[in-house]
Length: 400
Image (cartoon, rainbow, N blue to C red; front, side):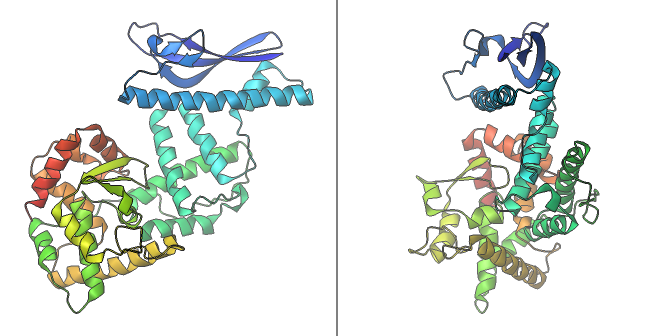
């Protein structure tokens, strides 16, 4: 008979978090496997073997709720392994049970491999690496529109197609390298476990680290964009308005703008989840934003902006509009004699640059605007009082 239970191994240092461990008893042998999850003693009900959630939805509540869900999934997997051993009469030691748990249960698919790698490094206590792997996984998931692929089909052509997608969506070169290096590391781990034969799929894509290209526009340049009138070129006028909307909303990414729904705007607040990180953001609605939306509002469309115009083929519409907008912005930048090549991504850098010039605390804007990942920026923004962020944005908008 095999039994699995969860125990809290308390820290030897008073006031420190303890480590949750899985206790496995098989054939009278006992093993303890560290889960990678840490808790304070008062957050664990030893009798019920369950997480104790605090009453208020604090930052700790969010962590504990997520931990609770992870424990449920992993215990379900342990029970599945025990059933398999008993049903098939598999003769193995307690170490064999542990190895079955550590080995990914999958048809050899890429998404399953990515999921296993994220969970595996987190179980080892490598939280930072887990976040990096999860970010790369989420990016590739969006590229594939949620459609999985067999590990044997992860080849150089597929990875090059993914790199093209990242470039088209305005991802910076260092960010592309960040994703590629993490995905390559995961792929190599799966090769080591003999789940796939090595095909060196990342050999033709960029995995280096280059200097970040300046993308911020001066205050005068932003004023010139705002004052520009393109009466003879309707598409350039639209591109200019979408750029300004991105700037007004603290550098909202084009993909997030594309999928904004009218229902996301309620009681003077625009609320949306970033498609890249899943982080939920709230933007105080300002008159300048409403002016742009009012110009393009369509009663027959659920979307807030005229990027996706009809139901069906939304992703194709988004990509097509993105290419057109960036072409028109580049042309506009040349007309105005701007010092940088104008693209939608410049709005984000410009907002951060102006905020920094106003001596806004780095906790709000975060220096990660120059990092490989934008994740730190979003963590800072959402952890602060919303009124501080709205006040900062209003200060910047009043400068134009």
